[in-house]
Length: 148
Image 1 (cartoon, rainbow, N blue to C red):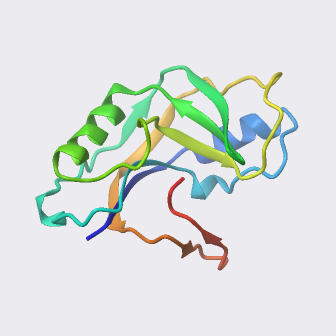
Image 2: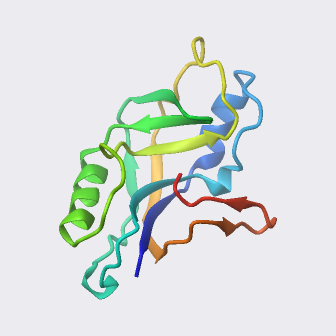
Image 3: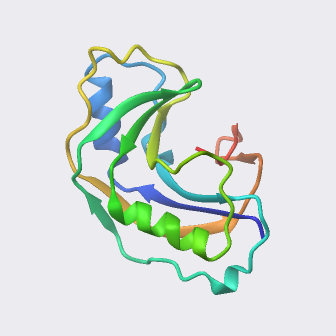
């Protein structure tokens, strides 16, 4: 199975509200926020994967960035990095130069020069795994790539 692994952000409303108060527009739905852990286009045996079913609280300093057309918040987390390495050790592929955990805040580029990064806790839910789909739809029937 080609694999997509992620953790949902459980306090997405706090994060999005922080940026709304600073005047940012077209922000993501707080309930759609997540951190991708693995995006493997290589078939692997998902039976060999053990998911972490605990919540994770991250308090590290975050940085804002623009990835192509996406406005993201990069997260420094040794735990997320270790989990990424775990998936790679289990045979998952990764098509990028490096892994940098992030939360996509908007699919609209933003001017971030004067934006204050979010400094509160980021609470992530348990790891989830699903078959990789190059295109999926949310409840509102909006298509997204599940890469971000």
